[in-house]
Image (cartoon, rainbow over all chains, first blue to last red; front, side):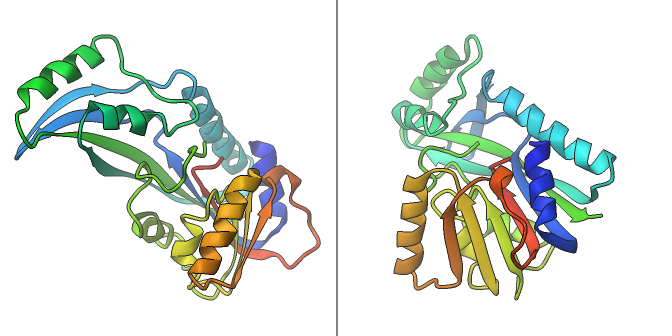
Length: 138
Length: 104
């Protein structure tokens, strides 16, 4: 990943800007049941296969800023929410990833219990967290 | 980190990433390199601002979709190519801005 950043640096103008949109390093998708104005958290998903890739990407960004190839302009952490109609939709959503996240122990059971008690009009809400990092060519 | 199907809803709603990107750099009139453009989901959001865009993606099927969708939207300042950051070659006109969107 450092190599990728270096190759990009080589095709940028001096003082050019590189912006990276990344999954948040630690906040994996948060699942909740939304019923009217009520929101009941279910679980934060886990991604054992994906996490090393995120960590490696963040490490590469630190390397190229620490060694002075890029200057850090700023980092922002953001969220967006997706509402899904039912557990089947959630399953489909989770499998959009090449390395799908999964529920932690007990998470799926809690989802099913809260979903059953959610009543008509309940939705499954997924909160996704991401990070936007701005770098300038040094 | 690309998703299997870029157009599904597991990305921020249209315009959201662009707003955050432009907090770091304005894209108007810029020559932009996008790494890992997927099906061009983000590319199509900002292409109208840029002077030109060179967008690369390792998956030929996604590049085909990106080209088709850009053409259908009348976008003609984007060059979509199969490729990776590691294989970028020096020698052309350098870029003002580079974007990695969920792709490092």
